[in-house]
Amino acid sequence: MKRLGAPEPVIVAKPGHPISRRDIDPDALKILFRLYQHGFTAYLTGGAVRDLLLGKPAKDFDIVTDARPGQIKKRFANAYVIGRRFRLAHVHFSGGKIIEVSTFRRAAENAEEQSPEGESVPANPYGTPGEDAFRRDITINALFYDVITDTVIDYVEGLKDLARRIVRVIGNPAEKFMEDPVRIWRVLRHSARLGFTIEEATEKAIPSHVHLLCACSGARLYEEFNKDLAYETRPVIEALRKYGILGRILGKAGENYENDAGLFSRLSSLLEIEDRARTAGHQLSLEEMYALIFWPWLGPLLAENRVDLHKNLSDAFSNAGMRMSLPRSVRANIIQILVIVRAMDRALRTGRMRWSLLRRAHYQQASRLFFLIFKERPADKEESFTKLLEQAFPSGLKRWKRRRRRPRDHF
Image 1 (cartoon, rainbow, N blue to C red):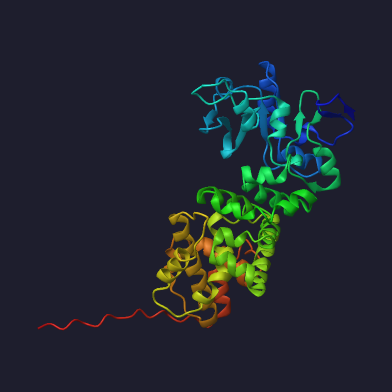
Image 2 (tube, rainbow, N blue to C red):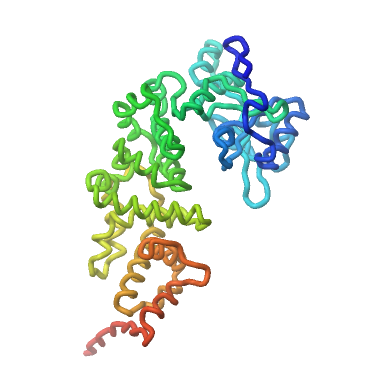
């Protein structure tokens, strides 16, 4: 390990780090090498570097460079520039793969300090690699990997924190949380998924700033919660409950999970089953994950014998006071899935099934969810709810009798 004079970074060459080019996505390598060939500096950064240093397979390969968004677009026909305040490039590849390429940025306050007096246009947000590292949220996500020199570059002592298994905010935690309260959420997410300890000063600042999450837009809270449902959901949800965030996001649903240990235990068990299923290659859709999240909370309502179940479920969501903006279409699909799962449960107990449900758009999603909830495992390849029902009632199923309308009186 070689330390250059401060404020230069710590630079670690092989064999001081375990990262191999073989573990990096080939398309990410193409981007890095092409930028280098055109005279730009480009590094792999974020979670990919962190995970590779921990010996884990990386999920997302983000790239940061001194090339501006327009320059990136000119050199990649499959690149699209997005964003309003901070523009960056999404480079598209086959199979729906997208690799994010951003330009080195400085912290917003530094950009404002360096803007000329009286200038009406926004200050230049671009910066150096060091400035870009210090503007990031936590130290272990602010590391760079240079594929050309095969070195890891550390401006913020992220390597030390990785070795100590610590999640630490870069800079003053209270100030960083006031600037962007979502950083609290990210600290908890990374700590929960990695099994890392939250650094003492960072953890002390969380309780006194967690209320600031309520000021974030509902759309942004929704996007962050979707990240929690992407993988390893259970430990993150448990951390959100521990710090009183579930109620602030999910309204009455979250409050019930925070106040009722038994109810949350049922949710935690379901999420543990889902995490195991995902590890085995069974992936639930986003709507299925939301249906799983809300199943224990809506259990009493689903158990009632009411004709207007759809309306009652819709009212429960409307009256929950969620600060997270759950799109109407997503909410409607969640309700459809839950209603079908409830019908499946009743059919398996009574032998009476409304077969028209098989033609519903969400039948397959509900079937997958049914196995996780009631069988505590994903369905096998040759297994289906219909076969399960036939096995439970080998002598035959009862036909669902449709209610006949009373004939109108004619005068």
